[in-house]
Image (spheres, helix red, strand yellow):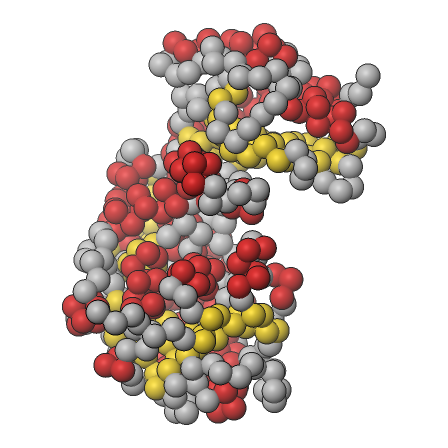
Length: 481
């Protein structure tokens, strides 16, 4: 069987949700990738990836600039969307970007363009879906062969839909919801979306065609919320009322979840429309097995940045895949979490790092050690690891070490960062991070991602203790004899 030909690809929207997940797959397959971004500094890739790609700064909302693109491009991914930037004129902005893109492609001589759009199967489309359809029509006039993939809700860690579902379920065990939660949709796992995007690359039998892509489950939004709760191991109660207007629904999403108001308005507008795939012919053509909604939720939690590290740190260390760049792969969660953050200027960076690297075990936790011991005893009573594990070495820490009831995810002395993950019994997941930046300020952050209402009650019940414990800890760690 002959090897698939390699391509030189223009990846627009490279620093977006889809682009950041598509890029490593394209590189893994051996393609050359040129990333088109408005600001090169905002392209969040590690140094090894940065060496393998070419980056072009360009704004498709501005008039095309000749000679900006490199020669030899044969394929482009169109992943440009503006839905979260405005509630009024995002459709006009998307149309301008599409027309300018076509002008760029005239000069580049690209053979195939792959566009990720939204499923449009309703005569009365939302503004969001209508804009996607209009962009598709504009791209079809371009000087290239177009392949359109139309997806519904994409389920994956970090996607706006997933984060909204997570916020709603984790924060509200009882929900009074608008009637649009009874609208049917057909979600798809991000992993499957990436398979489709790479699967159509260079395939002439997909040229100048539009395909719906979706997972196997057709669900209402209410069923999606209930399915999320099942996967996470708790129950929620959802009651539907007909009186909640789109505007009230938007405010509801905005105040309850981490989404912006602009995005909430556009999402609510779309949620009133049924989004179900018409067929699965592309899935059959490419031989792709799609995952169920609950499988997608489970994979999302395994692939969320932190859970990925927790579940695979041993493999990483054994294979040496990350070498000394672990920090570039480890990030503390930002959505759906509760935090305690403190900072303190330090006079002697190395001496303070010595204190951090001695934390736990016989050295204790620098403040109210008796409370830490009580917490460890309670954890042990509940079947957890307690404090009995201590630490392996009195002043050396390595990624993968156990540290009392924590696991060391990252110990990078050179960069001044220690990141711990809690292995105690908790109604959620917890991280404790120490970082000293170039400004010689010690940053201490405790992060807790609660699981349901019980998790939030747990956090707020111990919040008074946090004030004293974490405050005393950072003060004592910062002291130098």
